[in-house]
Length: 402
Image 1 (tube, rainbow, N blue to C red):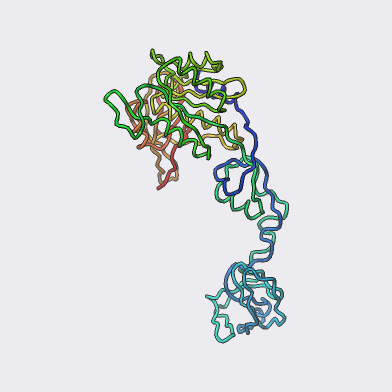
Image 2: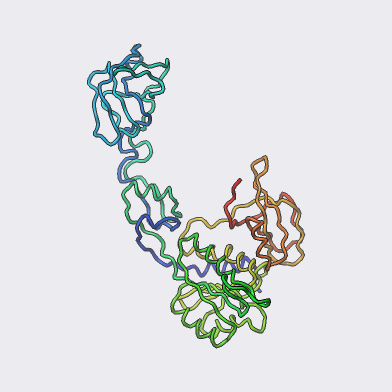
């Protein structure tokens, strides 16, 4: 049995880059960018009006002029205009090119406009106010986005602005999630007293949906020969295989032996942790990576959130894999010499500190307890007592809102 840190090292040493693909921009949300994006021209590309109103020469205002005849209108989307008479003004719309001959914009709210005459109603204005000057955000050629970031709506907007109709992203592995066990029935079925509905597969699928990763699913009954035959097919058809159940010490936990018999190299089996002790990890030549999680739902869920997401983030070249740290909200006593992944509810105190309050459940089979918590805090092995206000790493499985 290895430690959690050793397990993570094995996973780190078996990262696999699945390459790069080019996709339409509109399909890029949540994907990992694999190219740098540069400004194709200055941002903004011209001196841009930022308020609806009038544009004047500041020198006229400085000289005491408060009344201006409107000589025309500069609208957004129109070519650049010019004011020839500095004693006059132009109406300007938000987004328009700042006209030549004027250098200051005054809002409609600060003037009285009647019959083509604008009267400034305020006593103070600033030279060049309400103008977004050319190139102040970015210069042509500046790097705006860099490879390795996860694409959100803001990155989509930037790519559209610079004319990137297609973008290069990390290719995702061809993936299957496999449940195991005769006791499992479909979600739409009514289980008999000795049966339960499949839940782990759905939890695992939602973890991968965050990556816009499309997955197949399958189920293995507790029949050794059938397991072996189906595993042979899956190993040839998929690059990432995720199994749930069948890896403990029960008489029908066939997976460890079956995986060995079909040529999967075991890298580790069993980790000094709770939950998720029977976790199994291996690889099939250079073709497939295999995660085999315990069947208990909290164990399966925790291992996917901690280990699977770490491996996947590294494999697709995502730049961020660190864990933030938070304060423990209460004393915890835990006697086994295991890394303890404790379910916690998150709150923020008056000092703007994030607090992790332990949520007591009924073991790794208590899937419903996950609903009451937000995250797992990582309490290291080698001690029995963990004290309130101590700081430990944490990983979230839901967004935190007020």
